[in-house]
Image (cartoon, rainbow, N blue to C red; front, side):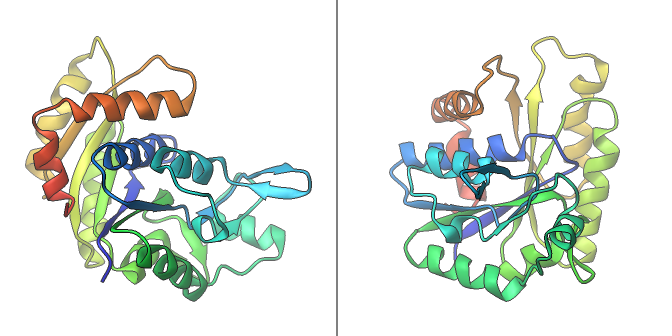
Length: 238
């Protein structure tokens, strides 16, 4: 079984890609040979007749690796749930193909960072969900949550669903924490850590950078200087 982590979110737009990219760049700074993968991307842009996953490109750039077909096996046009995007494109998402791509990448890297699509209950193909993909890849989960109102409910639901499906939740990252938090943000980490059955491995600050790569690099540099980062990496199996 390959060493690695499967990054999922409590919802879409919580910053999974930036978190995954920041971790990939942090491992690069630490001299760890990390591979990255975005198995399914919907809402791809088209350039010169080719579909491109900007998420996969960001992950690969952060990790310092080439973005090859195995890094993003399924590229879909419409920005909708992957099962629907695949139907519109006339594509069938095959888990065995994803597994083959994953195994090839894992064979040449010491650690794998895989980013899911949306949350655990997002449909991929034929009744199979993102949670089923994480289980098939045999990877523990890192859950990315937002800090504001509603995040306790969403995070607990995500962790509960994971546990019901026999998935291990390694921890939770609360991402994009504001400089001036309100009461909801101030209390979220405590309640999530005490109720979801997994530790809060980090509360990552909001950054004003517009470019996602700059955000990821800035977060990686910040993490590299935190005393707690070694503990977090150990929790992630490093």
